[in-house]
Length: 405
Image (cartoon, rainbow, N blue to C red; front, side, top):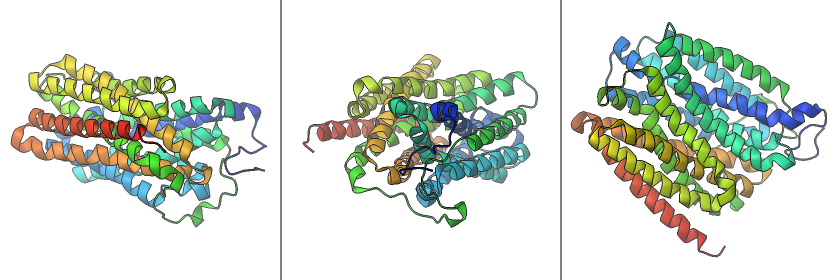
């Protein structure tokens, strides 16, 4: 029996009540790892199937559009049917994606695998964040905000690291990573079954109806600056996960798949570290400061592209990832704090809709420009555009901070 909208049931075991949010975060990380698992493997798929760099960006963007579609149609469904059924469906899509990748021998199957992966991420992104926050004991709520965003970013980073290591040093590089992920998904499914529901009076899953994410009036003032920061930060991560493997291999001569996975992992790991700074800064200050650090990361990325040097690329992953992490945790914290419990899932889903537009649109632009001007110059155009956006975002956020409520 529950006594308010997000209370844990009284029947929950004490150990689950204390650590349930950590178990939910593990399942969150496993799901998100599956979405970036193919990142170091695109070169192998190109050799096996044969397709251009533009196709790589389209395959990647299909994932982002899958996320956006789910967030737009079902972003707030968990506010009515409960968090756990939605997350279990997300794991189901993750498993289906892995199975499709195991059978992938042409571009349509790659697109289908990425679309299913996008569905899984779309179901987990806002709902998983809300679930981790709600499962945490009151004294752990601040820590739970970090755990939720760290599970998101850490999971995204672990995907390419895991697949890169397995593809480089184990047999069957296009098979074993997805078999391992299927096993992790099964374990995560079992974990979620142990956890209580946090939405009181949740209705049966069959009653779910598509609804666009809604923003209650309390959230609207903080949403715009938070969403702008999320868009700029996710655009950098989109570049690292979609086209940086091709740059590493083609321009820098890095052919070790584990090393490629490690470079991509670095950006997400730095994002997690950047989130650790937010409690000291405060969520409101973390967002514009994150934009400033992100601009520094984009400058380092431009240096690597212009001079064809590896070191600035790695530094770009560290610095830009840290800026993205600061902005993301600040954005999630601001929106979660401003949202009523019954609208929290929908509000967070709306934030990630904007963030995933940041992943998809600039990456497609890079893919379109790669043919006429080359990958390096396309990346430079991207870096310049995103730096301008981040600068405008930071200026807007600072102006908002100086405006009385």
